[in-house]
Length: 194
Image (cartoon, rainbow, N blue to C red):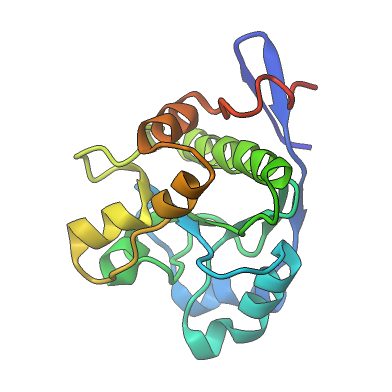
């Protein structure tokens, strides 16, 4: 189990390997410059399993895929290697990504809290592992970026996730930025300590 030490607690989440097309996507898109991690929200209801299955079954015809999905009580599934070009953030964003992470929608607040804790941890951890700054939506062209930042900066997509979804559960933009920068969800209050 991957773990990340923050303060005096170790927060850990299992990352299930669930590769797209036996990882044929690695040969399909090529490598990126590894300067950003992109935070997404799925934008449609459906369990983590439904979202992952849809992407796995349609990634070539939709020409869209991300490396990770989070949802269904804090589960994480990795669909491809990091450091390869993924399709989810427009041409410019896709060439810069190390990883793109989708957050599936939760059916209740308890599930959302677990999903948010895993999402925050994963975004922070992926950035730290790739030696990318853990700041969110800074003016720099390097760091963790929301899909909204990608749309407003590169003007190649019109998505504004994940802030609207996070706000619907009471998480402000600043709270999300602080949580990701620290690698710990303020909603979990240490509940993920192992």
